[in-house]
Image (cartoon, rainbow, N blue to C red):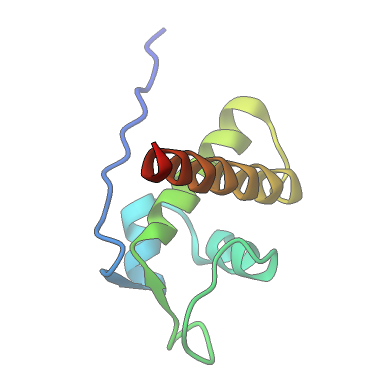
Length: 100
């Protein structure tokens, strides 16, 4: 049995994805991204899915969520909470580096 290795290519946070681009990049259906938007995990600009634009960081959020769901069987609300905690941890670590 072979194991898939996780590979997340970090995209410049100033880069913008359309819904179709994000789906293609993360190999997910649009419904997955729409559910993440509804859960508050992604915050696109634009009024409707056809107009949505996502920052480059959205790709990382989708990849982490997929990992949590696939490998740890975490539901979407649980993944949303985990993402929030991961981001808070990163903010605190960054703050500590600046002070140190």
